[in-house]
Image 1: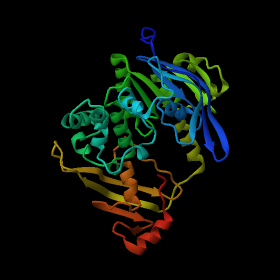
Image 2: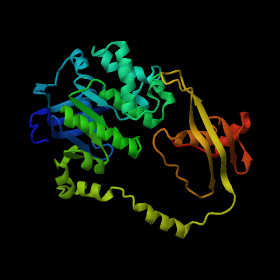
Image 3: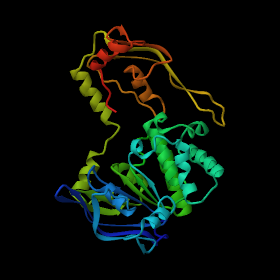
Image 4: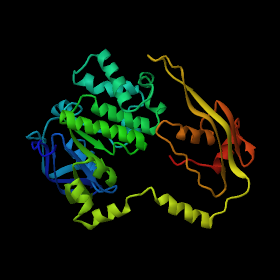
Length: 379
């Protein structure tokens, strides 16, 4: 497929980007080259801080105020992107180039409904009427794996889980059917089933419409499976690049070999289980006991007419001192809501929560504040 679509839609040649930090200048990207052709998926892979996202931001002229492109050339469809006016960029972003940003918690406007934000590219670029854009937003949210999309479109970002926010950003990035989609860690907050659904859709866009995709990821396995070409970055430099299969089977740089060796494998749980059984013996009374815990959230009125959502449904579990209990499930399955209920950051609809034998289900005021010194959440 890629060989037939030889026309390059994006070329980056010798890109250099520096950040001004106080009186120092730090070079974050040093001489990066890459080409993305129509219908091609190119993945930039590397550890945090390697310069992956800086490359994406430079391409879309979205660098931080203290950052500057100090060298190289960026061209799109044969036209240089260096020196374009902001008005010209506003016509490009969202329409010709779509972006799925990295941090869903910081990338959505907290005072606008999710549906309005997904529909925004269609309205800004005059691609649909307000009513048409609202309908399209619901379709896009459904495509991205959001259940009850008509109702969810009327909700606000704080009412979405992290994975649901990520899906909403993907829906917005695809709204205007851009020629190039830059996806910065687009599936980092998603479970594997929804991740496959999203990546399958991106692959379909690439194959059927010739949409070029620049995928920024730390997941070398996903890049190898989904990308045609892989560029490996380390400390601001592209240390390895080529067809995905070649990079995986015959890496030219020791850093790429280290990434391949460090890729997690499902079989690792067997070694973990064996080591745990040898050194830890659980016993005694549970420190946390949850009985028949349920949480129901009201939903805004939508086309489907559904009035509520049961986020946690009759859950019973216990945790003993020194034990690690993993709650696993897809985005929106109720994992984070369960954690918030246990810590009494939300009130349950029904059921009970006990901590070291004390019923804390209805605990309030000073007693609850004192208890919170003894448990914490890492967000």
